[in-house]
Length: 154
Image (cartoon, rainbow, N blue to C red; front, side):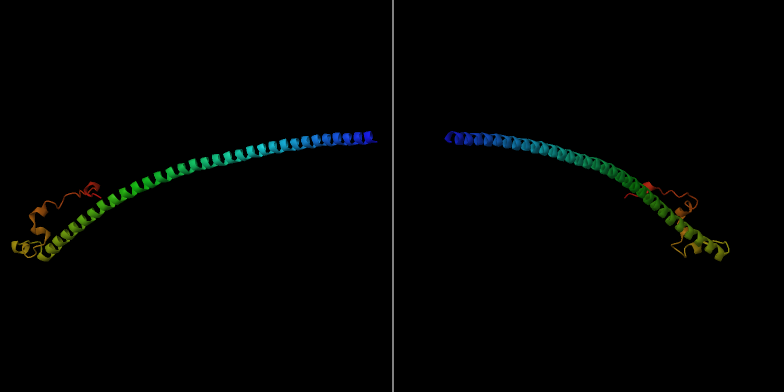
């Protein structure tokens, strides 16, 4: 009996060690599967991250392009504004000059109409601010208006 009990305990031990080896192999196999699964998951994560970075880089490039287009548009609009402002200054100067000419011509017409077309020397001195009192003004009566954008510095 002793030998049978020894054999029986020895065979149980062999079965246990076989079971332990199987269990160890099973655990090793699961561990390898888990490691492989983790590697695949990490690879997919890196791929998603790279795609996200690539998408962001494409978006940055697109936004830079749009920004350059907007800056170009702003520069063109600013140039047009400056051109219109310069033209407006020229037109304002011409308006002032033409208004002064019109006032002078109206003064002359009023004087001619009230004096029946006769200009006397004493009448020229009665209105010292009159356009006609300055002989230098007479040569400018029929001159063209020569205002330009170059006259005005900003």
